[in-house]
Length: 407
Image 1 (cartoon, helix red, strand yellow):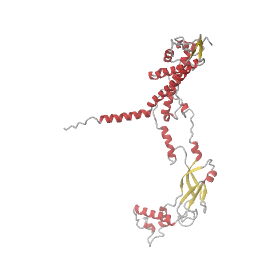
Image 2 (image 1 turned 45 degrees about the vertical axis):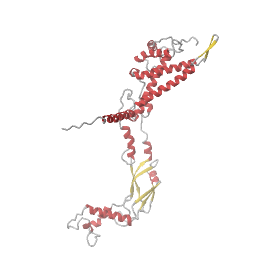
Image 3 (image 1 turned 120 degrees about the vertical axis):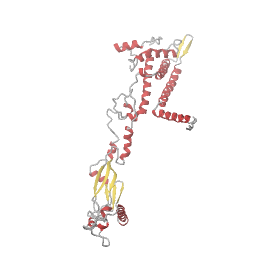
Image 4 (image 1 turned 135 degrees about the horizontal axis):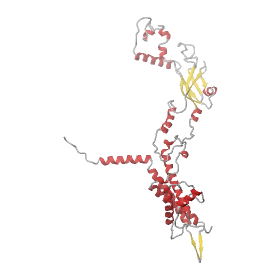
């Protein structure tokens, strides 16, 4: 181990890369080989290694690293740059990406914001009104039993084979329409007149084969409202009340004023209680959709490692600095193996701890700077900046004197 060579002053990534990929010999140029075949990466690899070595003190000081150490740091820096970039892209575009096929190549795609996911989310509000969402509304019929006021809806659901319970949305327990009392069969036949005037004639349907008297619609509406008010005040009003799973109906079935033939006695209006409901289990199941081969979370958004050739000078400058910080960290770890080295008559203290601490600070600062840069180019930040520019432009134009032209 004592004869391991250190940085000689130069390297040849292309030669090592060709040997590795042509003959599959050890060692490989980089640990993962993500960018080894990229022509720009091959060219910059030697330059980055030389840059890092010079910044670490070579040739004044020995640099106890090899070319593969610099190349590993270079590969790591490019990968971290891509990770930060695509993590930002995922955050900025996830509402538009969710549900898309995982087979799409999003690295080079321009993602146009869509309302697809927003509409899908907002449809759930309409679900409560029966106008959207992905939970089906069902209709149920509960037989009304004469003399029975309270009914167990949970028991009804169990009898219907519904597992998990139901949620009632609408109950159609309504009094007979007032118009059915206004135009009852007997009245239409001319019976039950008021003051010797046949009711049918009074309400506009004529008397026998005589003339037909058509009354204004407003007159009919007033009569309907009068009948409804009379029923509410003098009769047991049609209503219902739900507490927990028990629904109570008013009046008690079989005791109302109007029967199936429209007159006193007999059964109440209708023999079933009709209602809309949803199955609670449907609501739970609707929260999950088959995400096979679709973007279902940030982990399967199909971003891959960046193409180094396509990274601009801004990105490459960051990568070079991060590679240097990574090389400094590696050199510090190497030098920390021996904190001091004996020499004739004295000893030399190495600066491993300082290198490691400095590298950690620099890497953290570089990551922070990169994230801030990406955040400043987010869709929201750019729109806010455009708005501010627009306001400033209008304010500046308003300072221009307005010339009045007189023709």
